[in-house]
Image 1 (spheres, rainbow, N blue to C red):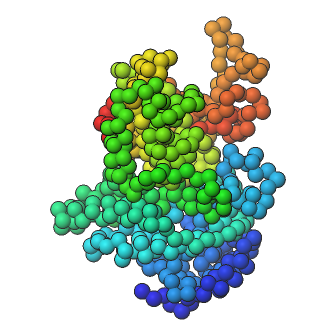
Image 2: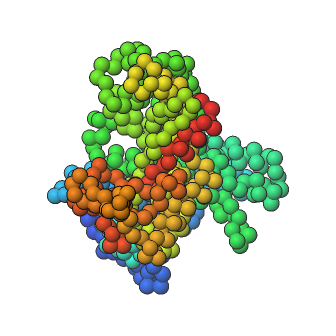
Image 3: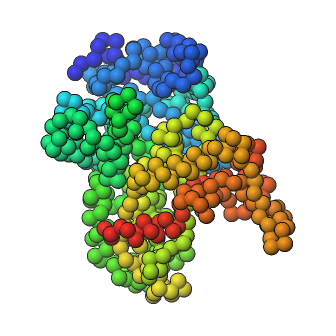
Length: 511
């Protein structure tokens, strides 16, 4: 479908518009006065996109499922998204500017493409679908979200526009997106066939976004399909996972990525293909000890994580860590070797993600819009399993195969939400405090460096499956770089309780 005349541009015009905006803040280019709306409301979703569309390109925003603009005859979707340097990299960008600085930029969030089409019937052909038409050719404008706290809509006015890119997906990525889309389509078509009555159909569609999530590689469906208090159902949208958008961002700003990027020799376009690959590897290596694998795979240098080295070689690649493999990271797959006892027990907790406390300061933040919710929805685990009969003998640690799991709706709604709500309550009610550790005589215990041992009273592993723990090797005044409610602490991370992982893996069959 053709766009109106005010949405037609040449590439030269686009270049002139965006080059003229680069380096300026969103407030400085706001000719259409979008930020005037913040005088009445400080919570306006998508205000950065409104500024780019209505002030830089000069057309009115709409909610149509058609492409935004046409560039030299090519229908193109215009997207505006935030990037920023992660807190952990701030020390690495100190004194850097330009490309050297931009190479550290990461995606702040995923990119929403379009709503899922339900009525009058689901779409059936990928190449003519609203999703593909709007994602085939993307013009992405990047602004830098220069804050580690939640800012009101008016605060976006000070964020600079830093660059833009034309994005077209590779054939492999197109195959992955197509497979994701067809998983959604096939599920919808079956429900429509089984329940022609709309009321009954909607009841059976509730929760389908969570049901499909473990099988989607590059996209996610948000928000969940459920009935609201008004009686209407909220409609989910196709959104590129933040992990995938992060891959796009790094590819644009880090021009050297291709030189050091680690890809599998045989990639996969679906979780089904990945599972088939894992089954083939299990058929070849299952029952082999670490000593046998070391010899079979030609591993000379042995590190403390020899099991992970073996798995990396099984996949036919060579890197230091499994999670350096781009095929995994862009799909949000956390590859983690798991060592269990013959009884299936395991006690090691799993470190997940650094916590940015920006959302904790926002009393109005919704759980489903939170970073922790997105993290647990986007990520899944691929676990090569080793059974340890003797931890000191490589000849008695045996490879058993692969298991894969994602976090289900019940875990996210109960365990993750509980951690999110309880930690926020501590902050908002000023109940956050430092808890010292004491010896048997009631004296404060000290570290070897002389500082007192202790931690903030955030959720602990003794009571929570998702809990907080500091992320430094040693706790000193110097390493306590995080400050919440005036309390200095180590940078905080989400951790997953080892006993939960052990129980979860016992319930799952090998791939």
